[in-house]
Amino acid sequence: MKAKEQKARESHMVCHQKFQARIQEAEDSIQAQHLIIEALVEEKDGLLQTIQGLQEANGAPAPFTDEWEEEPEEQPEEEEIKDIPLGEGEIDDE
Image 1 (cartoon, rainbow, N blue to C red):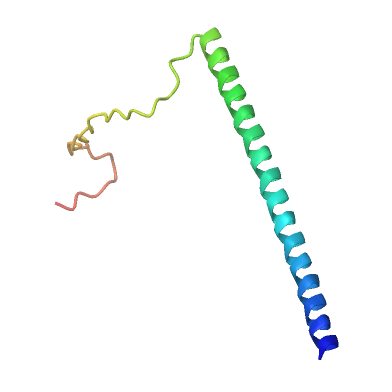
Image 2: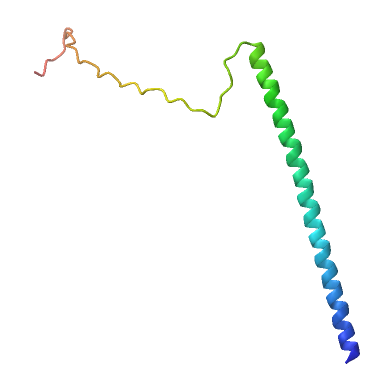
């Protein structure tokens, strides 16, 4: 009976160690992804500053802001139907 319990404990320990290794691997992966995201955010900020500097140097309008200004919709003017003179050889259906 003791041998069976010992085997079960050993099996449990092996399983526990495998899970611990997987957990550590997942945590390492998450930490690496976090560092990559931070680097990308810093790069994006740098690029936005560069773009803004280039726009200012070239006299471009201010960059887009989050505020949305709606322009009034233009009502399309109805085109007036004008009498077009008939040319020679054309048939008048009226």
